[in-house]
Length: 432
Image 1 (cartoon, rainbow, N blue to C red):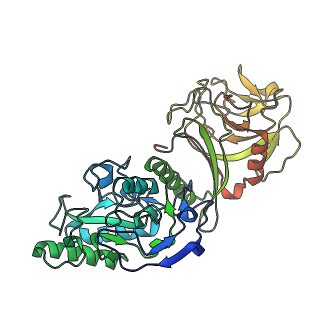
Image 2 (tube, rainbow, N blue to C red):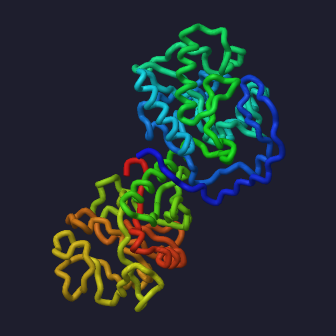
Image 3 (cartoon, rainbow, N blue to C red):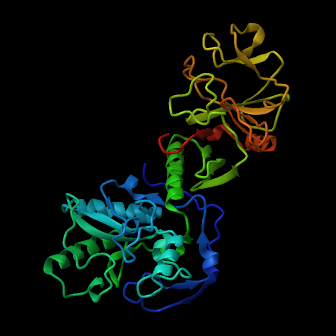
């Protein structure tokens, strides 16, 4: 899993807010050429257009200096050593890495995407435009289309370069002449490789490269922990799209501990968020570990499952899914010893000692969908009757199903289309 193509949702990028174009940049500055109303250009979109470079190209060495203390402020400012770039820049960097490997060299990343909140922290520590871009304009790194890199040998060890990172002397200039021959040769190789793959050199810093169109991307303020979860989401979407699915529902636990449901639909070139709610409940004992769901454990299975059929009490409902009306004699068998285990059948015909009525007095199954967990093949005792149905209310739980308010269920049923091969993703995103 690597490059993913995903849409910034609910994002407004106001090109009309550009006020002026400034001139040359001071040494050590990456403020860029645009001055604008930052409030109009800052995005905290929940679905960032960013790619994890370690996933896309594992051979690139990632050593983010702000994830440690080897930086201008001598403080750790990043919560993770996670290098992220917009997709087009990420693909170009992977191509540059492939070119360098042919020469027995490789890239080490010192910085890539930087949250705007970190830029504010940098400015508070060092409010000097010669060294740090002010948060009103933001850094080029805040847009995810710029990268700071150096060279390493085939074993990942540094090779001689003009200066160390964040050196603000004249030697840091991309074209400073008074350096060793070996450092000049390595700098030239880096610059030639990066420009061949589309990057633009920043005159004031030999290690800094911008991808064309960097200033068309919005400033981002998404922390690394959220970004890591988002990239996992996008990787799953990308893989499911390759399998033909175009409607995906996610139910996962947020860092705050609460649950969240998000539904996406693939439009011609982008994934669009269709629904989002925190009004969702799962099994009373949370999510089962992958492959560990058992009958009667009160846990919701972790994994990715089709949504193929709807059910309910009415003769017909507004849905494109195949629909089955439930009656008083309809049950779902949860007896592992029955030949009808994890199947819908009539009570009068079921050879089972345990089952669920599909037409309940509490109306929790008034509208619902079957989550195709343990249905093909059916493994006795691995769990049964996993539905997406009407909830009992906030603070409630289920025996293992997913449940939301009735109105939300109705809207999901209207939206789902079997042609789009809908799937539901349950549990922690990493490891699914």
